[in-house]
Length: 450
Image (cartoon, rainbow, N blue to C red; front, side, top):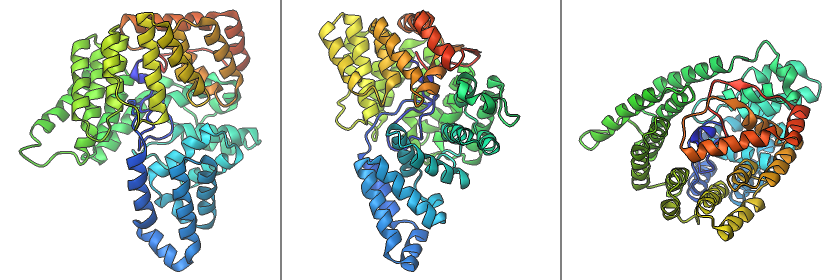
């Protein structure tokens, strides 16, 4: 699959809510939970002060939240965060980003409704930003719709003015429920202009934090959204040159060991778009070798490209053990096995991988949809697509996937899968469902599907 569909759709430790344009990170949460929760419980001076001044109650809620995060208990996570927000309003802005992002993400999957909306409102009230300094556009999109449906349009428009991610803006245009918001004077309607502005923001953030390599990677991904592949190569050349001299002098980046493999990953994406597949594969293999913290994401991304290139045996050999993978990582692994089984005409392996994805369909419907298309299960894929459009919780994402895009160049198999999706969208029953809930438009940026 084309990595452009998920700017960093990664359920490993630091992933924000799904962002349709990021590199895929699939590692587990164990190390994150231990490190971040330890710092959360005991590391922040304001928290220590509040505990001393406010007695045991604040500390008890922190410990209760930490326990909920370890269990991935979404309802309890939201209860604890909203309680802390109501009673100790200053505290939300001191919490680790990863903890808040996990809670918001898991509460979406759990469909917690009003309690989740209350949390989003609290985060908006303190003007929460993602850990890389960007607006959490998906959160604000969801909050704006809730406010509109509660007949609070002016507040909805104010929240929507903070939506900067191009794919979230496309959702406003594609989903009928957002029509009034999309027409607001405060919301950007020109998607290409929004994409360029988002790149400008990323470049400004990177300039303010020159030792933060992750922000350089975000700039490279911004170039990818604008099909500026040579700019990606030039930008990453600079990073790799600095990396080469790091052994002889202090590193130019504080996060070089963790982020360097992701620089190789985004460079591989640009090379893939340029048709330089062997070079892309070499970089992905290098990322696998160099990554010491994340032993899942890079092998999965390597296996994915090998499968796209119709090299199924090599793809299977590249698949990593998934014991430490997040649920998302497991789903991606199953999708790759669908690709491999389809290429090898392995009916048993295909059915096993599809069954695994069916069991996770509620959490990862987009992956399941793609797998059905890859497997040639056209009738089931159409039924799944109609069901997703009928589901208010999945509708916006589904409509975003179905738009017409200026996709990156891709291997022949990926082109074939894209054609299958277009044929699926043209089926009368699917066409009627799309018209009932939204619309299809053309956009000059890469797509979020294949």
